[in-house]
Image (cartoon, rainbow, N blue to C red):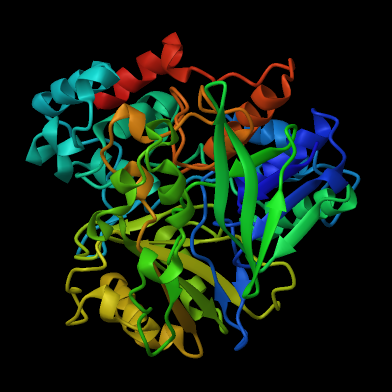
Length: 519
């Protein structure tokens, strides 16, 4: 049996690891195709030629959730110390660097907002309960704004929940409800972000690098610069069977014939598809899926096969799924010193600082340093993002989407009332992400395929765009769980998949949540 992964995101890397660890598959029989290097998909992090750094994003981790992720990382040796696992290293790091944000929300006067209260009215509470308790069938493809009134979107809770998880008011009510249930234990401490856990370095260096090293050590074949452009699918005895893959290897077409026992795992869709970087002086190019062709294969095989999902539900409205991030490389300590003094948090102990009256709805976070393996001692790196890059700034007279890094730093200094000199010798790299919250778009139940569709013999879907009841997209856990489900089902593995922890069924959590809602 051979196994082929199309795409090298965390779902594919996890799937290959589960094939080896739990399925007894030899690494030499596993091939991972990736069009865009490096491997790791959305969990990226890179040092650019000019010495500055770039992160498209950073995924939140918690030790109270992410059951499949920790199951996986308990197997993978740490890149720097193979005597301990990535899981052990991460837990030890967070015990030594406990998060407790003291400046979660900041207003136009650089005043740290009192977030001990969620700011709910009785109507807000009743509407939130109504949404939380509604069935997914009743919620259907409705939006959050269909269930909650305008005043709700001015509450402390909404600003914190929205920016922690990147929700927009027009996103899916179903996904919002799932988050409220899955992360209910985070509700009572949302203002401190005490439940958020960080990796020692960025997630590429901390998770992807050791995972790729482990897979390579088991002989997995990594094929970079290869685009899988089509797959031949036959229907036999009512089952879809992938017979052949068509590849583009650096401009040269190839085909791979599959035997009856071979397996194919497709990463259908990508939240970081068509992303682009700007510079200190120029905004990122405005790319779409026509430029990247990143959705084409899913769109092709889904035609006439509704059980393979509906990509158009997710990739048809860039203005509703786009936001912009930025990575700042500081070559002197002035900004970090000023920000630590203002926030009351040493770098790595706080969390997102959100500017509530920012037209862009900008947030920044200072990581523990160094944030990259090999980062020079005199360099510091932080990250930020804005949910409304299409809007005119408060201090810069243009939309964020039209700004280079220098303008973004000017806007940030305006909100903090810092002298622009804190960014002397700093470089800001903006990043446009047109489909970054596409998995939050309103959808019908059938728009996402199951990890292994009921009528599929050897094809599985491993991504943020599959259907896993009760779990939440836009998390590392969702991709890893999808991979574990797909591998176990196709191989008939009887080992139990770690169940989703139902904090929303905990009496203690329910009481603490109620107390917080009425604070």
